[in-house]
Amino acid sequence: MQILNNNALDLTGDDKEQITVRAVSKLAADTVAFFLDGIQGGPLPNPFTFTLDKARNDPSTLTLVFTFVGGGGAFDITVFGSNGGPSSFFRFNQFGLASGTISYQIDIV
Image 1: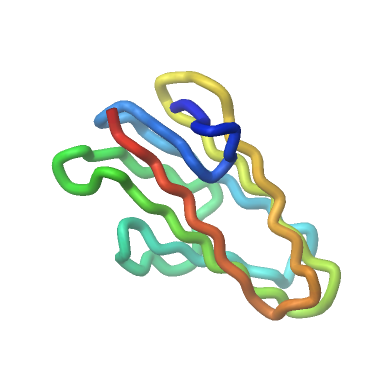
Image 2: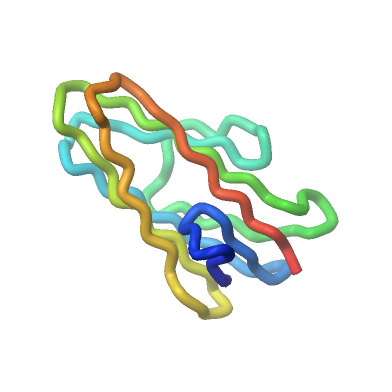
């Protein structure tokens, strides 16, 4: 996996590469759910691993949906691939909102 355009949410990976996602909450009650390629997946397992499949989805899109119970929440998200390369790190801060989303786009080569 590689990071494109110096943007932690814009990635590229090899066909059939396994992508692993870890999301760590600053506060225990906050939660994160996911959608993978437009299909709702439910609560995000930690870690969550999926396989890139160029024939089915290129690019592949992973959307994370954060829900915050109180104030001051944040999630640290790390994404890495089974074929090596740099890990992607992104911190999603609450900024006073009850929920928020980010999406990773992974181009498959």
